[in-house]
Image 1 (spheres, protein in one colour):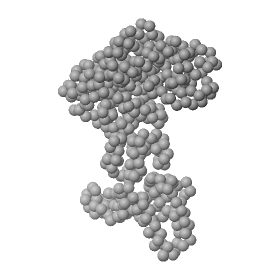
Image 2 (cartoon, helix red, strand yellow; image 1 turned 45 degrees about the horizontal axis):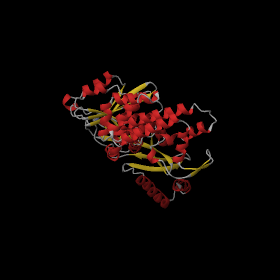
Image 3 (cartoon, helix red, strand yellow; image 1 turned 30 degrees about the vertical axis):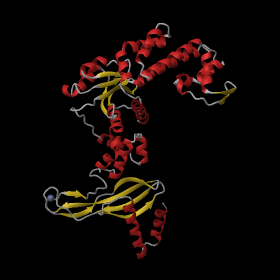
Image 4 (tube, protein in one colour; image 1 turned 135 degrees about the vertical axis):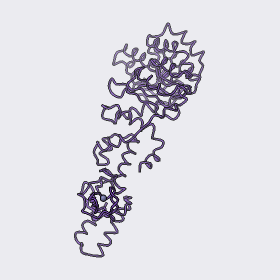
Length: 442
Ligand SMILES: [Zn+2]
């Protein structure tokens, strides 16, 4: 940082000093090297510390080239008016390069041309380095406003970069295992997303979730390609079972394990709340059922044995002992807790017979909240069985869910479906090839 201030000050003082002049130029060369401005045709003549940002002033010049129009010889003309090029921030300060570009004029046809540099693409205001940085930050899923602020450029420059990303669908391949899901990209607007289960690459993001939208999209793949799909995982209550069967005749429909467990645990949670609300709000029952909800949701095999002082009970208790207190408040809570834990256990241990026997045995006598979930398990028994027999972990879907949450939070509302789509594609389809991608954009 200090070299800017010092040299600028001393430059004013000792301008005529040849020795200083020489070291000054060397220092400027050092700066261009340091900033990776490799174009030898750029000469930096001055540097300024503007307080809020740093500025480099310079010009771009080289021997007159041949005329792009008539191939005649061009000659040096004047300099174009200064262009402002925001550059990557340096030592925590935004850096602005003010560059004057040489203009050439053709001796034969009079055509004018402006000197070019790899620093900035033709007709661009943004340097290539900044452009790469925008791409990288978009891939890292940063908010557009944040990117604009960080690089001292306008949000519309970031938008333009976003629009440069092109994704093309390959209609000749589909993964063997796909996941289907729906996400709201704004209030009341749903989007259909199909992902490659193994690579997480997004195969389709559709504006809308109607059967027609999905059918029309997948019918663009030849039947031969569609026949290769072996498994499609999807959520319970999905309206797409029939459609998936029609489009992908060889695919097994598998309910996602994550969603099955999620439906069970939501039912448990709602039953807890219903029972909790029967107690007075100031009672220990109400307060502890509210405070320790996680102990009920958790897999009972994972409860900790560590003893701590618990102000609510005014004694030292382990999590297991707290849970025992909660269950002692209500017989209904205890029964549902035990059923919930047993179902979780059988599901995780893949004891499908025990799992379904237990459901059939209990379905008539459980709370209506549980009844609804258990009924769908019975109705979609084949798909639940697939989930127990085939190895699909939940970690991947969760990763996508979280990613989409972050994208939605970062983007100032998606008025535009295309932006939502692009950001998801950038985040999920490019991530792994980040380095390669940035390099290929040089
Ligand atoms: Zn010419």
